[in-house]
Amino acid sequence: MEKITKNVYVESKISLCNSSCVVTKEGVVIIDTPMVPAMAKQHAAEISKFGEVRYVVNTEPHGDHISGDCYFGGTLITHEGTRDAILASKVEDLKAMLQRTAPGTQLDKDFRYRPPDITLTDRLTFYLGDHSFHLIHMPGHTPYQVAVYVPEERTIFTSDNISRTIPFFHQCVPDAWLKTLKEMEKYDVDYVVPGHGDVGDKKCIKEMYDTVTIWLNTIKDAIKKGMTLQEVQSKITMAKEFPNLPRDERTNGIIQMNVTRLYEILTK
Image (cartoon, rainbow, N blue to C red; front, side, top):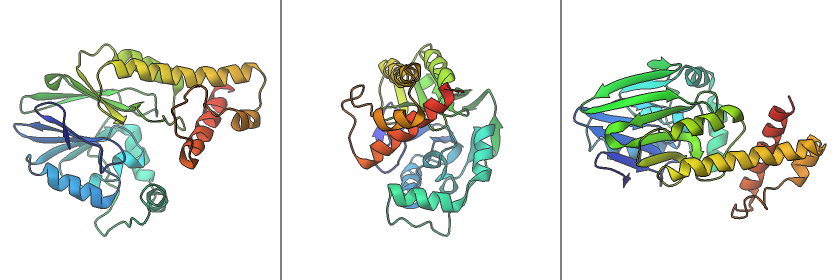
């Protein structure tokens, strides 16, 4: 785990998303959990050195953030929409996702989808030791995104509303996403922990705003030109807009998914 502040640690090496923890005088708060069972157990063992896990927060409903919950103790908190997604989750879907992202991985006997103990729809604040944890509903990457602001550490955990890798748009709410990023800029923080990629400062909020805007404007321009969905899917590669993106099968699949989703949203 990478130590970000005196009490904040971020794990990205063994987790498909950034899984973080905040150490307080009265226990530990986990923010998102690793998807691969062995990695989740390893992460839980490392965190146990800091103290008892008192709370786990899921910032969104996707499998890479929620699937390791069962390997951690404490009270689980999510958005109400994330709770619905967890209850509807299917083990077969997770197995397929694991085979794509971590081939050869098997679910163990301890795995289960863990429903949350507490949910929020707008805001929730809890206190532990000398720390306060402000959970704020900030839709964008999905309708149910939650940011976690910890003022005592001058840190905000943004989930996938900020991703320093290629963003996923398949469940996005694009207009709300841009508003959310503007709202994030108002927080007085030194550290921004994204859903994926390296921890940054407030500059990465503006970087993400620009990234989402470029994706949106590219598809808007295609629609104005009268391009059909099939033409968008075949002709828009984002190679000009993002020349540093890897050109592999996985990235190409994400680009196809993104342009399809944005086209469908913008033509409704």
